[in-house]
Image 1 (cartoon, rainbow, N blue to C red):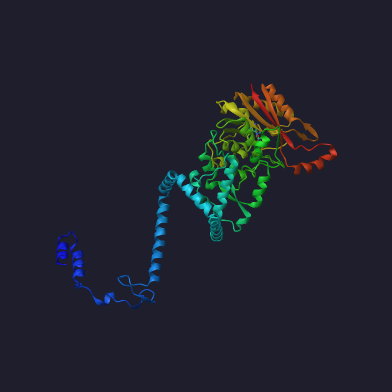
Image 2 (image 1 turned 135 degrees about the vertical axis):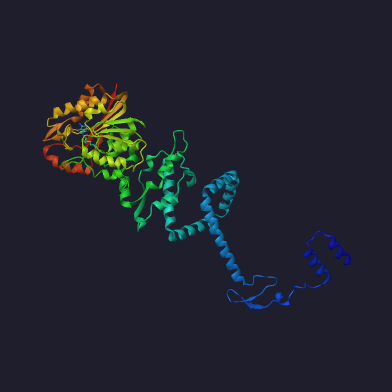
Length: 495
Ligand SMILES: C[S@@+](CC[C@H](N)C(=O)[O-])C[C@H]1O[C@@H](n2cnc3c(N)ncnc32)[C@H](O)[C@@H]1O
């Protein structure tokens, strides 16, 4: 014993530890030791007051329940701190996580697959309960589920493989979309989440087959989402527009039973344009935006300069949204005053801001010095529609032949600016005034051929609803006239 104590004295231990060991070896008592500290007995818990057994050597004298409660609260606090940290450093953490995941991808996937196979039923049950529970308590979760479904459907429809990566990879932020969609409608089951600019108008896949992240980001940007009543949304899908565009564009009859719905989202400024009509009297003239889009897609290219000698109110927006440089001549001050604030408001994202010139298109050459890539217009059908009366207004001309002379002069000036081998598309219709039938499309072909243009193609566009046609048909039956429900799309090429 003496020897052991002397060995301890020579060791490198702290003096306190040495003293402790030598005291226990020799049976000596610690001078600071008080008998009461070690007593084991029944005491009330200082925190909850319940009776507890005080345990040997425990300094925190609280009962087991209070102790566990405290631990749980601390863990919760830690979780909140961790979550806050994650939110703050999301941008750093996510790429790291992805990188780690990618490094061990195969291994992790194998493990997951294995686990899923072994516990299929258990997982399903758990998922069902989790979703049910969350759906009943969390509105944001319900909307996020809807948004996810929309993304999955879009990829299934508009990509070749239908494969979807995590939304974060595409820059889709569900939380921001949900924020944008607030306030939610009271009865959400009667509303759909609608994409203002339809998803089919975006190119998710580049020509080389790679994913076009920019387009995906734009398609799923918060601003492109809105609530639309289910009824309105479903009726929209019934019309022949973008979705069916490919089916009808390549045939010589374009069937449009309804007006285009492309820009008819309630948050879209073009939706309001339908209230802006330059036509006087009972006729309202609005160019079908779906037709305009088909024409622009078919006979022009991105970044092309488009000249429109009879601008009206629709083609400028469609052209700009299709990334063309649009220059429109419109003689009516009233029309220009209504269109210009919409162009300036920048509510729609334009690559090239459209240009509206408030002048007689007879003067086109004094405004433009550059050649243009495409001429696209819809001239007045003589005085079938009455536009704002002003000097130079074609619909003011009393005589049909004088109208044709002036129309020819305008087309001559415009065509002198068209590049060789490029196209000029005119949408025209025949009409009947006082039971006299005017073959305006034939006159247009004649005039254009006299100006050296070659008729390249002709398409018939069904332009009004069958409903209206049927009503008119009843009216015309007695006079043995068929009711006109079509217009002509005349395509000329500069040779
Ligand atoms: C058939 S409308 C175009 C309407 C077209 N359907 C639309 O809304 O898109 C023809 C337009 O040409 C305009 N116009 C008539 N004579 C013109 C001229 N000499 N120069 C420029 N614009 C003219 C009229 O004011 C009218 O707005």
